[in-house]
Image (cartoon, rainbow, N blue to C red; front, side, top):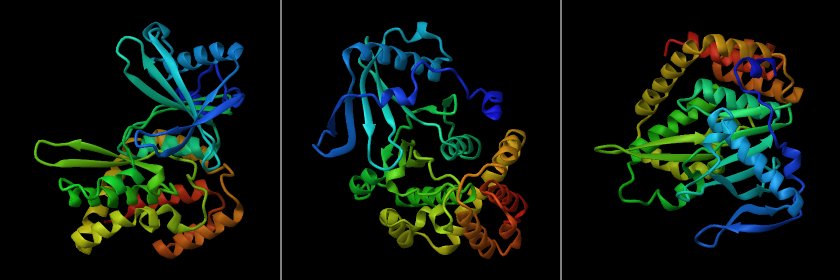
Length: 326
Protein backbone atom coordinates (compact mmCIF):
# COMPACT_ATOMS: atom_id res chain seq x y z
CA UNK A 1 0.00 0.00 0.00
CA UNK A 2 2.92 2.34 0.61
CA UNK A 3 4.17 1.63 -2.90
CA UNK A 4 0.70 2.16 -4.39
CA UNK A 5 0.26 5.45 -2.53
CA UNK A 6 3.68 6.65 -3.65
CA UNK A 7 2.79 6.10 -7.29
CA UNK A 8 -0.76 7.45 -7.16
CA UNK A 9 -2.67 4.17 -7.27
CA UNK A 10 -4.63 4.66 -4.03
CA UNK A 11 -7.81 6.76 -3.81
CA UNK A 12 -10.83 6.88 -1.54
CA UNK A 13 -13.76 5.41 -3.46
CA UNK A 14 -17.48 6.05 -2.82
CA UNK A 15 -18.50 2.42 -3.45
CA UNK A 16 -16.75 -0.69 -2.17
CA UNK A 17 -16.71 -4.09 -3.83
CA UNK A 18 -18.73 -5.58 -0.97
CA UNK A 19 -21.52 -3.06 -1.57
CA UNK A 20 -22.08 -4.39 -5.09
CA UNK A 21 -22.67 -7.89 -3.71
CA UNK A 22 -25.95 -6.74 -2.16
CA UNK A 23 -27.99 -7.14 -5.35
CA UNK A 24 -31.40 -8.76 -4.97
CA UNK A 25 -31.96 -10.23 -8.45
CA UNK A 26 -30.20 -10.87 -11.75
CA UNK A 27 -30.86 -11.95 -15.34
CA UNK A 28 -28.51 -13.68 -17.76
CA UNK A 29 -26.90 -11.43 -20.37
CA UNK A 30 -26.82 -12.64 -23.98
CA UNK A 31 -24.88 -11.25 -26.93
CA UNK A 32 -26.33 -10.10 -30.26
CA UNK A 33 -26.36 -13.66 -31.60
CA UNK A 34 -28.21 -15.02 -28.58
CA UNK A 35 -25.20 -16.68 -26.93
CA UNK A 36 -24.83 -16.65 -23.16
CA UNK A 37 -22.00 -14.24 -22.26
CA UNK A 38 -21.54 -15.80 -18.78
CA UNK A 39 -22.33 -12.34 -17.36
CA UNK A 40 -25.56 -11.48 -15.52
CA UNK A 41 -27.13 -8.04 -15.14
CA UNK A 42 -27.89 -7.34 -11.47
CA UNK A 43 -30.52 -5.20 -9.77
CA UNK A 44 -30.60 -3.47 -6.39
CA UNK A 45 -33.37 -2.29 -4.07
CA UNK A 46 -34.70 1.08 -5.17
CA UNK A 47 -33.55 2.81 -1.99
CA UNK A 48 -29.96 1.69 -2.63
CA UNK A 49 -29.86 1.94 -6.43
CA UNK A 50 -29.54 5.74 -6.65
CA UNK A 51 -26.72 5.82 -4.10
CA UNK A 52 -24.83 2.98 -5.82
CA UNK A 53 -25.26 4.46 -9.31
CA UNK A 54 -24.15 7.90 -8.15
CA UNK A 55 -21.09 6.40 -6.45
CA UNK A 56 -20.18 4.39 -9.55
CA UNK A 57 -20.42 7.48 -11.75
CA UNK A 58 -18.10 9.33 -9.36
CA UNK A 59 -15.71 6.34 -9.42
CA UNK A 60 -15.55 6.61 -13.19
CA UNK A 61 -14.54 10.27 -12.76
CA UNK A 62 -11.75 9.18 -10.40
CA UNK A 63 -10.51 6.58 -12.88
CA UNK A 64 -10.69 8.78 -15.98
CA UNK A 65 -10.55 12.43 -14.86
CA UNK A 66 -8.70 12.41 -11.54
CA UNK A 67 -12.00 12.86 -9.74
CA UNK A 68 -13.22 15.96 -11.62
CA UNK A 69 -16.97 15.30 -11.58
CA UNK A 70 -17.77 18.39 -13.63
CA UNK A 71 -16.52 16.53 -16.71
CA UNK A 72 -18.82 13.53 -16.23
CA UNK A 73 -22.10 15.05 -15.05
CA UNK A 74 -23.71 14.05 -18.34
CA UNK A 75 -22.86 10.36 -17.80
CA UNK A 76 -25.08 7.75 -16.19
CA UNK A 77 -24.83 4.09 -15.16
CA UNK A 78 -26.75 2.06 -17.70
CA UNK A 79 -26.01 -1.45 -16.42
CA UNK A 80 -24.15 -3.39 -13.76
CA UNK A 81 -23.07 -6.91 -14.70
CA UNK A 82 -21.47 -9.64 -12.61
CA UNK A 83 -19.51 -12.66 -13.84
CA UNK A 84 -19.94 -15.78 -11.72
CA UNK A 85 -17.75 -17.81 -14.09
CA UNK A 86 -14.47 -18.58 -12.36
CA UNK A 87 -13.58 -17.67 -8.80
CA UNK A 88 -13.14 -13.89 -8.77
CA UNK A 89 -16.69 -12.54 -9.38
CA UNK A 90 -15.87 -9.19 -11.02
CA UNK A 91 -18.45 -6.47 -11.66
CA UNK A 92 -18.57 -4.65 -15.00
CA UNK A 93 -20.04 -1.16 -15.06
CA UNK A 94 -21.49 0.27 -18.28
CA UNK A 95 -21.33 4.09 -18.38
CA UNK A 96 -23.30 5.99 -21.04
CA UNK A 97 -23.06 9.56 -22.37
CA UNK A 98 -26.50 11.21 -22.29
CA UNK A 99 -25.72 13.46 -25.25
CA UNK A 100 -24.66 10.90 -27.86
CA UNK A 101 -25.31 7.46 -26.27
CA UNK A 102 -21.63 6.60 -26.49
CA UNK A 103 -20.64 4.13 -23.76
CA UNK A 104 -17.64 2.82 -21.89
CA UNK A 105 -16.96 0.11 -19.33
CA UNK A 106 -14.88 -0.27 -16.22
CA UNK A 107 -14.56 -3.04 -13.63
CA UNK A 108 -14.86 -3.31 -9.86
CA UNK A 109 -12.97 -6.25 -8.36
CA UNK A 110 -11.44 -7.57 -5.16
CA UNK A 111 -8.01 -6.06 -4.61
CA UNK A 112 -6.00 -9.22 -3.99
CA UNK A 113 -2.20 -9.09 -4.15
CA UNK A 114 -1.67 -11.19 -7.28
CA UNK A 115 -4.08 -9.08 -9.32
CA UNK A 116 -2.54 -5.78 -8.18
CA UNK A 117 1.01 -6.97 -8.89
CA UNK A 118 -0.17 -8.27 -12.27
CA UNK A 119 -1.68 -4.91 -13.22
CA UNK A 120 1.39 -3.00 -12.10
CA UNK A 121 3.80 -5.29 -13.98
CA UNK A 122 1.59 -5.03 -17.07
CA UNK A 123 1.92 -1.26 -16.92
CA UNK A 124 5.70 -1.40 -16.42
CA UNK A 125 6.84 -4.30 -18.60
CA UNK A 126 4.35 -4.64 -21.46
CA UNK A 127 3.81 -2.34 -24.46
CA UNK A 128 0.41 -1.45 -22.93
CA UNK A 129 -0.47 1.14 -20.32
CA UNK A 130 -3.31 0.32 -17.94
CA UNK A 131 -5.14 2.50 -15.45
CA UNK A 132 -6.39 1.22 -12.11
CA UNK A 133 -7.08 2.47 -8.58
CA UNK A 134 -7.04 0.64 -5.23
CA UNK A 135 -9.09 1.50 -2.15
CA UNK A 136 -8.37 0.27 1.41
CA UNK A 137 -6.92 -3.09 0.39
CA UNK A 138 -10.34 -4.53 -0.54
CA UNK A 139 -11.58 -2.77 -3.68
CA UNK A 140 -9.97 -2.30 -7.08
CA UNK A 141 -11.30 -0.47 -10.12
CA UNK A 142 -9.67 -0.88 -13.51
CA UNK A 143 -10.36 0.42 -16.98
CA UNK A 144 -11.79 -1.67 -19.77
CA UNK A 145 -9.27 -3.16 -22.20
CA UNK A 146 -10.72 -2.94 -25.68
CA UNK A 147 -10.33 -5.80 -28.11
CA UNK A 148 -11.91 -8.96 -29.48
CA UNK A 149 -12.02 -11.72 -26.84
CA UNK A 150 -9.51 -14.41 -27.75
CA UNK A 151 -12.02 -17.25 -27.99
CA UNK A 152 -14.26 -15.19 -30.31
CA UNK A 153 -11.28 -14.16 -32.43
CA UNK A 154 -10.26 -17.80 -32.86
CA UNK A 155 -13.79 -18.87 -33.81
CA UNK A 156 -14.68 -16.01 -36.14
CA UNK A 157 -11.52 -14.34 -37.47
CA UNK A 158 -8.95 -17.05 -38.15
CA UNK A 159 -10.79 -18.02 -41.33
CA UNK A 160 -10.98 -14.42 -42.59
CA UNK A 161 -9.37 -14.16 -46.03
CA UNK A 162 -7.79 -10.86 -44.98
CA UNK A 163 -6.10 -12.36 -41.92
CA UNK A 164 -2.39 -11.55 -41.85
CA UNK A 165 -1.23 -14.90 -40.53
CA UNK A 166 2.44 -14.02 -40.16
CA UNK A 167 1.79 -10.84 -38.20
CA UNK A 168 -0.71 -12.56 -35.93
CA UNK A 169 1.58 -15.49 -35.12
CA UNK A 170 4.50 -13.10 -34.64
CA UNK A 171 2.47 -11.22 -32.04
CA UNK A 172 1.50 -14.47 -30.30
CA UNK A 173 5.18 -15.42 -30.00
CA UNK A 174 5.96 -12.04 -28.43
CA UNK A 175 2.95 -12.32 -26.13
CA UNK A 176 4.19 -15.76 -25.09
CA UNK A 177 7.62 -14.33 -24.22
CA UNK A 178 6.17 -11.43 -22.23
CA UNK A 179 3.98 -13.70 -20.11
CA UNK A 180 6.80 -16.14 -19.40
CA UNK A 181 9.42 -13.58 -18.44
CA UNK A 182 7.11 -11.65 -16.09
CA UNK A 183 5.42 -14.89 -14.84
CA UNK A 184 1.82 -14.11 -15.78
CA UNK A 185 -0.06 -17.40 -15.87
CA UNK A 186 -3.29 -18.81 -17.29
CA UNK A 187 -3.26 -16.88 -20.57
CA UNK A 188 -5.63 -19.08 -22.54
CA UNK A 189 -8.01 -17.54 -25.06
CA UNK A 190 -10.59 -16.57 -22.43
CA UNK A 191 -8.07 -14.34 -20.66
CA UNK A 192 -6.75 -12.14 -23.46
CA UNK A 193 -8.17 -9.95 -26.20
CA UNK A 194 -6.91 -9.23 -29.71
CA UNK A 195 -6.62 -5.59 -30.69
CA UNK A 196 -6.70 -5.22 -34.49
CA UNK A 197 -5.21 -2.08 -36.04
CA UNK A 198 -5.41 -1.60 -39.83
CA UNK A 199 -2.18 -0.21 -41.26
CA UNK A 200 -1.86 1.55 -44.61
CA UNK A 201 -0.69 -1.69 -46.23
CA UNK A 202 -1.29 -4.51 -43.76
CA UNK A 203 -3.02 -5.26 -40.44
CA UNK A 204 -1.34 -5.20 -37.03
CA UNK A 205 -2.39 -7.32 -34.06
CA UNK A 206 -1.79 -6.85 -30.33
CA UNK A 207 -2.62 -9.52 -27.76
CA UNK A 208 -3.51 -8.00 -24.41
CA UNK A 209 -4.02 -9.74 -21.09
CA UNK A 210 -7.32 -8.98 -19.37
CA UNK A 211 -6.99 -11.25 -16.33
CA UNK A 212 -4.10 -10.85 -13.90
CA UNK A 213 -5.21 -13.18 -11.11
CA UNK A 214 -2.48 -15.74 -11.84
CA UNK A 215 0.50 -13.41 -11.55
CA UNK A 216 3.28 -15.38 -9.81
CA UNK A 217 1.04 -18.07 -8.34
CA UNK A 218 1.23 -21.43 -10.10
CA UNK A 219 4.09 -23.86 -9.65
CA UNK A 220 4.15 -25.32 -13.17
CA UNK A 221 6.41 -23.52 -15.62
CA UNK A 222 4.14 -24.27 -18.58
CA UNK A 223 1.24 -22.36 -16.98
CA UNK A 224 3.21 -19.19 -17.75
CA UNK A 225 3.52 -20.09 -21.45
CA UNK A 226 0.34 -19.44 -23.48
CA UNK A 227 1.63 -21.84 -26.14
CA UNK A 228 0.73 -24.82 -23.92
CA UNK A 229 -2.99 -24.06 -23.53
CA UNK A 230 -5.12 -26.15 -25.86
CA UNK A 231 -7.55 -23.24 -26.29
CA UNK A 232 -4.75 -21.40 -28.13
CA UNK A 233 -3.92 -24.33 -30.44
CA UNK A 234 -5.55 -22.86 -33.58
CA UNK A 235 -3.09 -19.95 -33.45
CA UNK A 236 -0.21 -22.29 -32.59
CA UNK A 237 -0.98 -24.50 -35.59
CA UNK A 238 -1.00 -21.44 -37.86
CA UNK A 239 2.47 -20.54 -36.66
CA UNK A 240 3.73 -24.07 -37.25
CA UNK A 241 2.58 -23.84 -40.85
CA UNK A 242 4.04 -20.44 -41.64
CA UNK A 243 7.09 -19.85 -39.41
CA UNK A 244 10.46 -21.60 -39.30
CA UNK A 245 12.30 -22.20 -36.00
CA UNK A 246 14.83 -19.51 -36.99
CA UNK A 247 12.07 -16.94 -37.46
CA UNK A 248 10.49 -17.91 -34.14
CA UNK A 249 13.81 -17.34 -32.36
CA UNK A 250 14.16 -13.99 -34.10
CA UNK A 251 10.76 -12.83 -32.81
CA UNK A 252 11.55 -14.11 -29.31
CA UNK A 253 14.82 -12.18 -29.27
CA UNK A 254 13.07 -9.05 -30.53
CA UNK A 255 10.66 -9.13 -27.60
CA UNK A 256 13.41 -9.87 -25.08
CA UNK A 257 15.37 -6.90 -26.40
CA UNK A 258 12.37 -4.60 -25.99
CA UNK A 259 11.71 -5.94 -22.49
CA UNK A 260 15.31 -5.20 -21.49
CA UNK A 261 14.73 -1.63 -22.58
CA UNK A 262 11.49 -1.42 -20.57
CA UNK A 263 13.25 -2.79 -17.46
CA UNK A 264 16.04 -0.26 -17.74
CA UNK A 265 13.66 2.61 -18.42
CA UNK A 266 11.49 1.73 -15.39
CA UNK A 267 14.33 0.47 -13.22
CA UNK A 268 13.70 2.73 -10.17
CA UNK A 269 9.97 2.12 -9.98
CA UNK A 270 10.44 -1.57 -10.78
CA UNK A 271 13.02 -1.85 -7.98
CA UNK A 272 10.56 -0.30 -5.53
CA UNK A 273 7.91 -2.81 -6.60
CA UNK A 274 10.23 -5.84 -6.43
CA UNK A 275 11.59 -4.77 -3.02
CA UNK A 276 8.06 -5.23 -1.69
CA UNK A 277 7.18 -8.23 -3.82
CA UNK A 278 10.12 -10.37 -2.66
CA UNK A 279 8.64 -10.27 0.86
CA UNK A 280 5.06 -11.17 -0.12
CA UNK A 281 3.49 -14.59 0.36
CA UNK A 282 1.87 -14.82 -3.08
CA UNK A 283 1.70 -18.60 -3.44
CA UNK A 284 1.94 -21.83 -1.41
CA UNK A 285 5.45 -23.02 -0.58
CA UNK A 286 5.07 -26.10 -2.79
CA UNK A 287 4.33 -23.89 -5.82
CA UNK A 288 7.43 -21.82 -5.15
CA UNK A 289 9.61 -24.90 -4.83
CA UNK A 290 8.21 -26.49 -7.98
CA UNK A 291 8.58 -23.34 -10.10
CA UNK A 292 12.10 -22.79 -8.78
CA UNK A 293 13.09 -26.33 -9.80
CA UNK A 294 11.51 -26.10 -13.26
CA UNK A 295 13.02 -22.69 -14.05
CA UNK A 296 16.37 -23.92 -12.77
CA UNK A 297 16.26 -26.68 -15.39
CA UNK A 298 14.97 -24.32 -18.08
CA UNK A 299 17.67 -21.69 -17.57
CA UNK A 300 20.37 -24.07 -16.28
CA UNK A 301 20.67 -21.77 -13.27
CA UNK A 302 20.60 -23.25 -9.74
CA UNK A 303 19.83 -19.85 -8.17
CA UNK A 304 16.13 -20.40 -8.89
CA UNK A 305 16.03 -23.32 -6.43
CA UNK A 306 17.31 -21.00 -3.69
CA UNK A 307 14.35 -18.59 -4.00
CA UNK A 308 11.86 -18.68 -1.11
CA UNK A 309 9.18 -16.36 -2.54
CA UNK A 310 7.58 -15.80 -5.93
CA UNK A 311 8.89 -12.25 -5.88
CA UNK A 312 12.45 -13.56 -5.65
CA UNK A 313 11.82 -15.88 -8.60
CA UNK A 314 10.45 -13.02 -10.70
CA UNK A 315 13.34 -10.74 -9.75
CA UNK A 316 15.82 -13.43 -10.80
CA UNK A 317 13.93 -14.04 -14.05
CA UNK A 318 14.32 -10.36 -14.94
CA UNK A 319 18.01 -10.41 -13.97
CA UNK A 320 18.60 -13.42 -16.22
CA UNK A 321 16.94 -11.53 -19.07
CA UNK A 322 19.10 -8.45 -18.53
CA UNK A 323 22.35 -10.43 -18.50
CA UNK A 324 21.53 -12.68 -21.44
CA UNK A 325 23.49 -12.02 -24.62
CA UNK A 326 20.61 -13.02 -26.92
